Length: 289
Image (cartoon, rainbow, N blue to C red):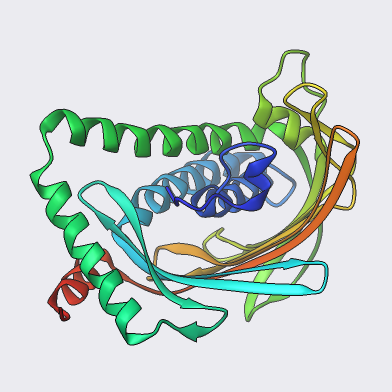
């Protein structure tokens, strides 16, 4: 689970990079339940989609990646870049650049030393301390998994056309929210105010791109905060291996009201250089100091 939650999470739910990726995949697999296929094909397609979703979700922590986060407030744009790795059961963010300027040599050396100290600390921690750390990480993953599992039940999908997206022949589906019962979960309330479009790879049923809009104010935490119409979210997915797809871009135009105050924030993140985590950790630990 990423330490830096996406800005949507500040007002809604634990919805970070992992959740965004699996949100896309769940959206696409829900879309399979449409006139894309005959009823006799449905069981096989749903089975393939579910197996792929579970496989990708499980594989995600196996990969380290470079994350660049950009935030625009008014006319000011700032960015931070990290190398994200997993160490002894949970993630770690190593700073690489600030506003696209690499860290000064002294700062870079200090961050590498902090990483090495953290590896030593985690390797030497007591069984109880390790259990608590990993349990906290897994709890957030489980919360995101619950959102993924609920997503296919939250929307009604319709096939609208076929076209090529990013070089892949794709089905294009639109999704509108189903009416949810009173007392629904926070995730269900957020989903109930959204509609979206998804581009699905015709060959393997991976999501290529998803665009979502908030159409109705979504109350969160009682009457204290709401996500407002005008909120727009886009995701992009790319193959990391022949069978695994992970997120490579995420952008949000977020409109939120808290009590009598309204705010607008635009964020974008890119995720690149996916490599096997153990190799990246070994490379980092071999660097000086």
